[in-house]
Length: 299
Image (cartoon, rainbow, N blue to C red; front, top):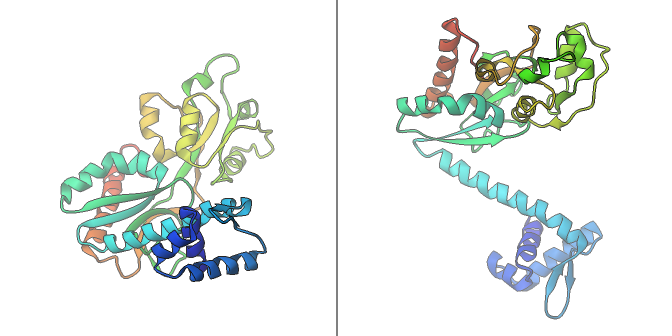
């Protein structure tokens, strides 16, 4: 780690002396660390001249990843310290969940708990809940981590959706078999969605047209709304779009997700006031909607 820190400092400053001053070590110590790294990798990380230091081609490829890693360590350290402060609640959530469910409702939580400052940490792809530095997380998963406390939310269901224009005209979408001639939009972080749905529709052998792949349902839904193809989506994510007519659900067939939705925290922290209040609010917000008999309006 010391050698990597020395490399990052030299690469950022393009100066051994500036790096040594920043790290509060001697110039020779920094040079020793760099030589050790170069010997270990069998490559030259810097081109050294009498007047300047430059990154080699290999060093230039290595530097962004190392800088990002140290930046993330610093951010996580700051979050770990800040999240323990009274009144600050850091919530980890998928970006689709944040945009489609949490953000439109968060003001209701803030109204009830004006003394709590909510910080959202979002991800565009699958992630594992970071128990250090994060207070609570809304995740799709299984109860398989003994270090986490889980509260079950619900089991999501996915179904195809498209723009209304995709169902108009002689070649419009009428029945599931028509999907063979239309582009099917994939969310590559959930690669089994289409295969499982087609099996449920007795279309396991349906030929498929190649289409653009996305890393989130949020982007896939935007592509579907633009008329780029048919996307799979969680039923709970599309209620507003269906009601407004922006998207349509062409078929009644939906399938259960392979994992469940939970709100989680590090085991032992579930009774902390700010965490417990947020978990209770999420559960109540969902169960209140479901108990009303109206549309499913979960995550």
